[in-house]
Length: 406
Image 1 (tube, one colour):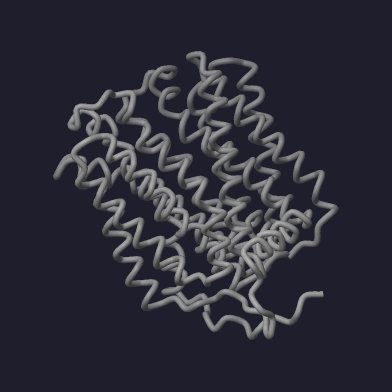
Image 2 (tube, rainbow, N blue to C red):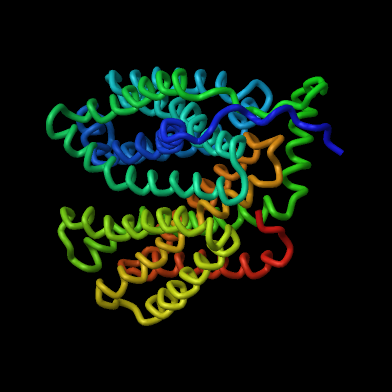
């Protein structure tokens, strides 16, 4: 038996608290997406080979994935706030170096460091939510985060394009510096330490803490089930993010200027899913929302499978299926995250790190698979989405009878 926990953290999910947590959860998404429009400009201005430009995002993502579990463990051991302050400080400094760099090597090194530090925001944002809420309330707060991420995905590239036109590519990298400054002040003013403490229990050694966290998380079928569902779904989401542009331009002949508005339709569906989850989870429960999301996945997956077999279909039909698919993801992610974190309040940081690493890792695998299979048609994207959707549905059906709903 675990010893009794200390008194619950004295932090309530007020609008200010939710806004700060939302900023933390979105900080890496904003940092990545705001730089997308200027990658080629950076390489050209610094005299680097064009093939190095995508590494500005790729290296950030690699470091972001690597940093999540260590950040979560440090927060479980030393507290949420010290790790947040340290992560935001390094994130700010690395962003400043990126914006001021005079060669591509320095840009890439700074982005890698920034990715490591950038893991602190999303991981500890999720951990703080688990510290202060559980069950339906945790799902509602996670739904707010999904909604904010959807808005950030829509707004950040537009912001990046505007800043590049007005002040050049360096201005886009100052966004992360300004965001870190705002978050440092906001964390200081709004958040309190929320890490649960065990009354009268001495702190375990670092290896002991790691062993206990691993046993708690990987010994819980519910943790593994929730993580698998959200990782599979997120893999399908990132397949759309990375595959939409070449398909819309090369297969359907749209001008690059139309890519953003068309993608915005599916991103809006994802955002609607997050809003709907927050509104309905109190009525239907976390399990009910998972069932609804899987129903949307099943419908979209069947249609996408048919589209993959049929070849090229009218763009409105294809994008309707993509939008329903992303609606299901918006419904699923907050509830699957709540399910995954529910059983381990004593190791919420570690669990949030595992969840984030699984998301990024499977997303990278799915996008590489889709890119490797791209043959000048939409089949690679729709096929990867179909596979991810089918695995999500099968995973839900296989596990729903083996877990307790929060």
